[in-house]
Image 1 (cartoon, rainbow, N blue to C red):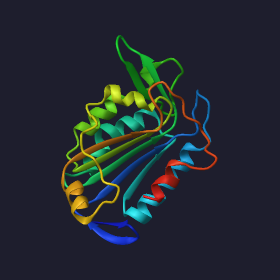
Image 2: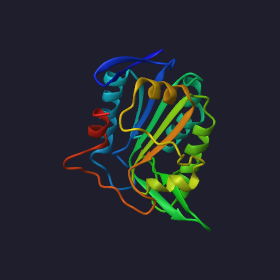
Image 3: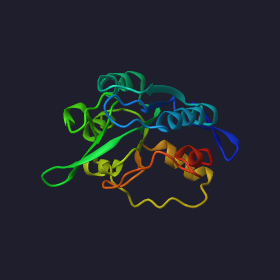
Image 4: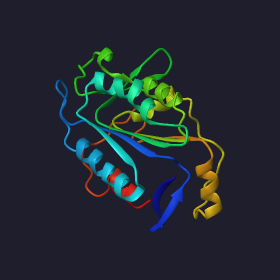
Length: 208
């Protein structure tokens, strides 16, 4: 069972393990360097470790081969049926126009401008997540054009209305059922900014 802090109280959740795979890329070899992605990734990891008791694995300034190895092998080796998993990416993202829908990509540290063969297709991320046996999966894409993931995703908004105040019975129902959720920082045609003056994703998550 996994322990977590909810409403400032220690709560036992019905997960065998809580695992986070966190990618942050600042030092691009052939693209503009970023300044906050790695720091955001590290701060998020700290929150997950201390407040939510996650086992955190970092992949910083990762190359295409390293991210593909993570998606194709590492995640599946570490995540089990009774686990919850968080996958986070902060770095460059791009969307290209395919025949009918936008095609979304995340950019590894060794990405080459205008060469999609050096990018990671969001469909590959979706396929990797679809193949996981985990009870809960949360995917967070913090990059430009991250909303393009919805065009490559089988995940859809449901009709479940989440109450403003979650009671114990609500929490039990939410955590007992299998779930896949995606959070994107931008729409499919929107750029993100590398610096936030007041709030960041980590600030928001610390208050949850």
